[in-house]
Image (cartoon, rainbow, N blue to C red):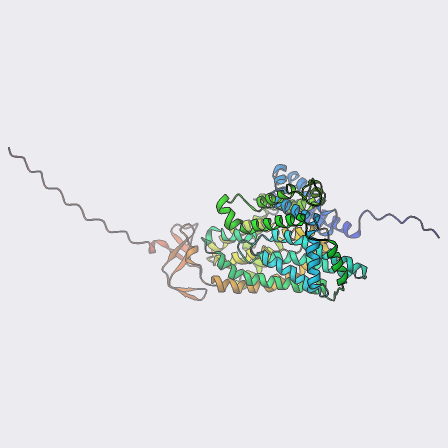
Length: 569
């Protein structure tokens, strides 16, 4: 019997309706909440973050559409004016993405990604998918130690998607579509997580590391080598945890069988390497070289104004002027093709994250949360201190830009260290590392945003493995951070001499014990209430006049000059 027309699909799913109700309820509940008298807009900004975050998690609307909400809500609530919010939506990070994405489109347009993917499949196969996962993830981890983790993800994604498309085409023909879907999710998440972990390893790997190195209280104490020896074990642990989580949660039990003869036939059909492929590959290599060499070669010549966005766009322009061999009269890449394939939605997603980060700073929300954190840290033992910092900032950085978090929280923790005479690096090192433990949401860090822009992953693909990885990094990474910080920087020792300056502390020749360690000299925090007094680490008040250097002796009086001798004619 003929069947009637299928019933129309519902306007929204149950999950979307629940997400909309939850987000709007939180928004309405937080608006009248008086979070801070000195910062009356902090609760408004918290309401905006709650609404947008819930809409993202439940995909109440398409993510780019939800990303437009801060553009309206923040000016409407008086947090920032419309011009300031608009600037955050289109900054240097977005321009770097534009340049990198154009090169990716060019590589796909000339089929270079297919050639490389088929070559890899013919050489290794994917019968053991964990080998593919570890290979791509380790490449991302290694490159992001010397190159921006965002740039690393951007350059690897087109090759990964090419390989995954080749594998999926055969897997679906063999009835293994679900296995191919799991492999795709694991590899793309592995690239994002591997890039984030590798960025921890060096000062130039991710921006929060540079924010730490520039803190005034450190006075240049954290250099490239010292950070490398401290952070590389933490980065390695994070990478291993990411591989274990992805294998257990996504890839366990997945095996694929590919037809090697069909792969060889597909590779042969591509023909010899064309000039277009050489040009596209050359532009990508140029882009990578400029990213890697910029701090060492370009900045000394051109100054710090030449950033990753400038080099990315400068390289991609070449694709529009180099002549194509396959299509005479055209360039290797035309603007029509680039415009059609650029993921504009990801730029809105990034812009929303940066706009909310600016709103957190302008409204004082980050300052309020930082003060609450500082109060929570008072009196905690050293390891619990590290664990609390890592846990708190890991949660915070899921919702705000990791750069904004570092820029706001690190100065606050520096002030806490000065007031309590705690070794500054005991607070600052865990906080900086925690800014990179952002794995749960596409907008949590830029690497996640890049792989999400492929439109091959959903929010749930991130929340499951990303949530488990985040908790694992906090639980297992915190002891590693604590141990390595003490091994490299001796953070369990007394307040160091290099961190003491005349503005906030005095360095006194006092014998005694500081946290059980015998010392012959120690820092004394200057009192803001009692003039010429300071407090030791144990709380004792010291009269600084007792330690004032003695006044130099007065010079002897000059002998009086003899009376003048009268002149005799």
